[in-house]
Length: 258
Image 1 (tube, helix red, strand yellow):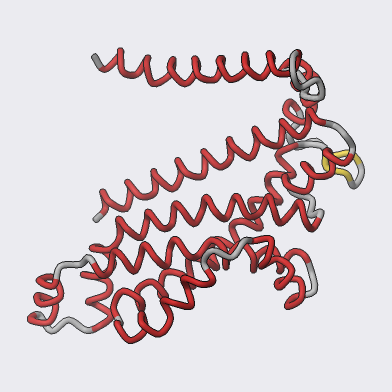
Image 2 (image 1 turned 90 degrees about the vertical axis):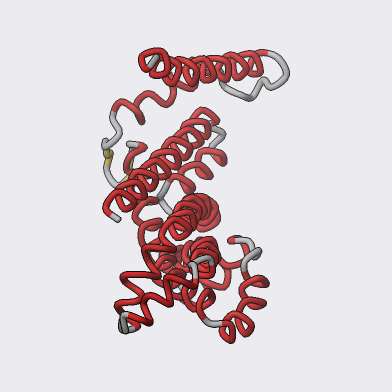
């Protein structure tokens, strides 16, 4: 039974991928003549894949170099989002006064598109890199804020009563009671924030022309190299999937340790 399940876990995604490639190939020879076929995409993009770290002069030729630049900005913006969003979520969850004061502001700012935050970041910092980090942080922190607040509010009052009986200090109550109890909701927010951070960096790089995956995608669109657009889309998807799996594994590790 276990072998059957393992085989299905491998074969079913493979079948889905083959069907997607078949639809892609059919579309490229019927109604969308500008869409390169899978074979053509591979032929044109092969140097970027087989030589992912290659470099020619000042122009990075490997797709990994573009992805690495994007990931560095994502890491900076995501770390800032977590550092700001987690304490803010705890305050919203623990303080009714703070929640009434700032929850309406959060609900107003949360739906704002990264395309609107980026110009403000450029006004504030004057350079594309810090503006990108600012945009990632402010767009990605809201799931962490809201899910952390939900997790804190859901903590049973009995837990807090026990902490009061044991006369735990506020810091020990936070470490021993609040954080472990709210951790599942917090990690839900962390995963959503990471996904948003990866989405935002692509849009930001396309607008600023930064030398990451998004900037490379926009450059190749302007150069009419459609094969590289598809390569960028696949790279974005694979990295996003890997980041989500990594966060899931980290969540399981923390749950086991707790």
